[in-house]
Image 1 (cartoon, rainbow, N blue to C red):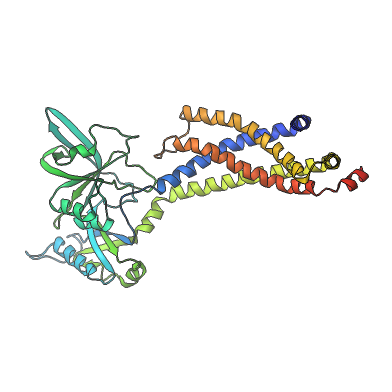
Image 2: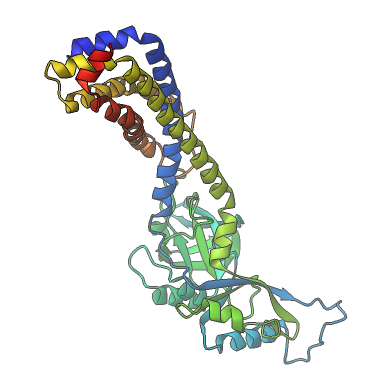
Length: 410
C-alpha cells in the first residue's frame, strides 16, 4: 500500500512540490511567530515578587512661588506640611487602605535612573549598578514586595525605615558581574560615588520591572524617602474591590492642599496598558498574520484534496470493491497529507536551526533560545491540525462513495 501511495504521489509531483514549498515557507514564518507568543506567555506569567492589584498612581505637583495663585507660608509651614495634610486626607477615605510616595518607584514606565553602589574590601572594590527606585516604606507595603530570602513586606519596610537600602536580583543571562547582590547585604556601601552618601544594604528583593515583558538587566536599588524628601509620585492602595468607588468619590478639591496638588490620577492597570501598547500591537498583527497563514494552509489542502478526490473516484471504488474499508480510504488521504508536511518540515527545521545558531532572530526577552526550540514541535502540531481539518471534508466525501454507482458511471 505504501509503495502504491508513493507511486501515486509521484504522478502528482507538480502540485506536491508546490504544496511542500508552501508548507516550508509557512512553517518557518509560523515558527518565528509562535516563538514570540510562547516567550511572551512565559515571561508574562513568571513570579514578579510584588502585587499591584487595586493600586492607583498620581503625580505630585507644586505651585511655584512665582505663580499668582501661590499661597505664602509662615515659618511653621511649607510644601511638605501641605503634602502631609493632603496625604492624611486621602488616607482618611473609607475606601483607601494605604498611601505612599516616591520617585520612579512604580513599574510601567521606561525611566531609568542609574545608581552605582560600591564597597571596598581587601583592596578590592565591588560595584553593583541598578535602576534607582526611591520610596517611602509604605510603598513597599502597598506593593507587597517580597524579599529573596523570604522577608515579608513589613520586614522590608522596616529596613527602609532604618535608612538602609534594598538591592534586587537581576537577569544573569544579560548581565553577570561579580559578586551578586547577596554579597552586598550587611555592607556599608557608597552610593553614586559620593563618599558622604553611605548606606547599609539591608536585604535583597525581587526587582521591580519597567514592564511585564522586560528583564531586570542590571538590577534595582531601592532607597528610602523621608517625609521631608522630594517625591514625584503619590501611590494609593484601595481596599479590595473598591477601586470604582474610590474613583467616584475622589474629586479635584480632595486632590489639592495649599500649594500642593495631585494630577494624572490613574490606576496601575491603565499604566500597564499604556506601557504595553507596542507589544499589544505586535501581538495583534502577528496573530492576524498567523491566522491568515493557517487559513491559507487549510484552504490549500481543502482545494487540492477535493480535486484529487474527484479525480480518484474510480480508483477509490476499485479499492473498496477489493476490500478497502472507509477507514482505510480516510487513512490513505491523511497519510498523503502528513507525508507532504514531514517532507517540508525537515528542511524547515534545518533553516530554523541555522537561524538559532546564527542568532539572526531574537525577540530580546528573557528566554534566550529555549522557546525557539519549543516552538518547533508546536508549529508542527498546529500545522498537522490544519492539514487534518483541510483533508477532512474531501476524505469524508471519498468515504461515502458508492462503489457500484462509481464503477457503473466509469
